[in-house]
Length: 303
Image 1 (cartoon, helix red, strand yellow):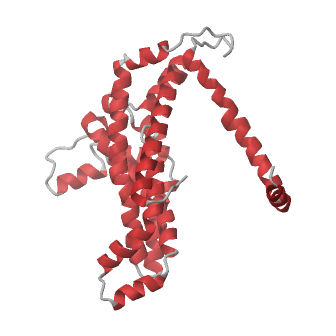
Image 2: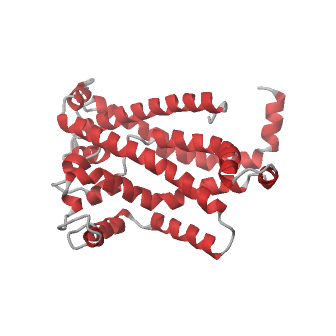
Image 3: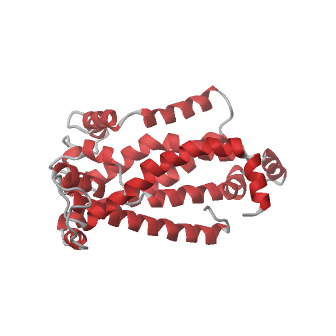
């Protein structure tokens, strides 16, 4: 061990001691439970322990990959997640730029506060609001019939073909304001002399955004994109459980809700663990690939 390392360690001893409880907490509640993934390779039941359950190899994975309901959940998850990535990832960036360009004052603070509020509503509350708004006597039907788009009311939540867009737009509405915080913090750290110099050179507002704001935000945008891709196969379970019903289940069932029903409702823990493990491995591969691409484009490493 190098003397310099020991010297630095002694200098940082109070900080090192403060880190130890967090490391112990992470080991106990994050790393030790990883042992539970062996259940995916066993035929586990509530009468067994993990060590006493018989091994079945990759049988649970073979059953999952031959199950049409699993592939239906994969299709719905990918469709909803890609739409959320397309709309939900860009919306906070655009909203943050618009808020940043507003002059400081009551209106700017009001816009920020109003945009944050939906984030603090639980999906139970949002589900009740959507059920009311999207019913045959709800706000959306009244509006569409008033402007002549609909001739008769429709119950959108029981129409399977409408579910993907309802899931995406409700998620964007709930999270877009909260997602602007990190971008606003990044833009606030940009040296204002860049904008002053651009104004002197005759740059328009759009040119300032394109040549100053976005390039200086590229690193944090890349970081958020990698994190978003990592959660691509993990749709919002709370949202799905609130909005799913027998009539829209063919488009609403996602991997998380599928694992929940198989594992906790039907008690097939091994099969549910196998599906969850396969999805986790695919998500990790997506994160690594996305990180390599963003590193090549941005010339900076996130990790």
